Length: 538
Ligand SMILES: [Zn+2]
Image 1 (tube, helix red, strand yellow):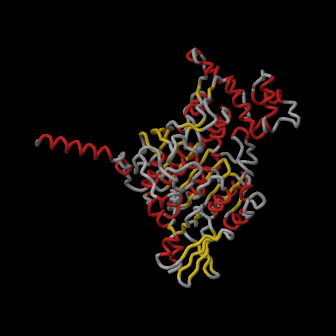
Image 2 (image 1 turned 60 degrees about the horizontal axis):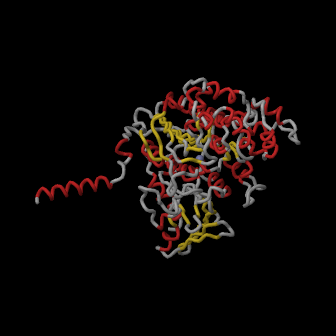
């Protein structure tokens, strides 16, 4: 009887222990002294075979990334095993999984295994990012991308919108986030002519930043806040890039570090190699190699700084894999081990431009396709069907046409034009005072690790920046309303009134404008403002 009781007690204990999720990150990470600087680098949609291929393209010489590979990362979102960039980056920025298209806000529901169910009031709730936490600690902050800066990954670190395609709202939040250094692209989406809201955000940028549009002007900035937009939409693939018109991702990283490191309290910087993902979507090995190597050069810049400086954390991982690229294709199913390295590399090494670069050389009638493809892409045996396909393809989608042509000749396989759900490589360089992040981690652990390492508290920052305004004010007899026509949040309590333009940090009280510590967010249902905004009504 007694023995039976003990057995059931032990069983109950085992059940209790197995029911507890994986040990908290704080149990395995020791922070003797918080790190001063954090650099997060994200090569968007970077599949592992693309990394191997990039390494072979430099004759097997190690990549900068190789030195700091430390584990693997799981990438699933709140409700799908294959993630979209928006929830994937949201997990890495906030420590919470989310839903396709959502940046910086929680999901509608958590349905993947091991997830806590999402409470009704937490649906689409904005959650603080590590960038916002760093800024509130007095650190300088920076964002870099090679796509338009309001694209999903940089957006997830700097905005809170349940729709990644809402560039107007995302970019307006980015401009009002108090970020010190923004370098990337997407001028069109800040300019009045192209925006749905017709707001001239370039003018707002010029009021608050040194606004630069060329590498030469970027080089001249040696202090202060800078906003660099070097293209109308995305930047070119590194291989196609005109260095007079666009800086490389490593040049942007170097400049950002130079400026941000002037703050004695340290800095947080996020760098995205955006178009690794686009090349993968296109099944284009040349674009992949181009931008994986360019991204790796940025990792080297970050790593060199970190080693020299001594109190800087460098962490990198792609947000999800993409395309199922493999070294070896269906054509090598039965003789893969007899294929020489040159059989894989020769075709790839002849290309000096990606499809986007080729597109600039075609004449109007596209009568010179064979010459251009031979000269810049190294393919001299285009078939009639291939020529026809190139002729019919939209110039902006040329990587989708020519990428697979070179892939076939280089025995490179692809399984999909979409993202894939496998684990990805984690890269981490930690200074001596912090345990290095290793093992198989979840994408949310990246944010939690950065939080721990900086000595920040994301939950407190969320509670401070994103209070449900209506609920808080109704308790006191006041009100919070969203005036859709004006795009304004109107807070009232007694005879006091505060108006905040949605997506900004600017509160208007009478004829005074007050800067708030964060942007005001409207989720489509709820109004979220900082505690400081509510305090103005006391
Ligand atoms: Zn992505």
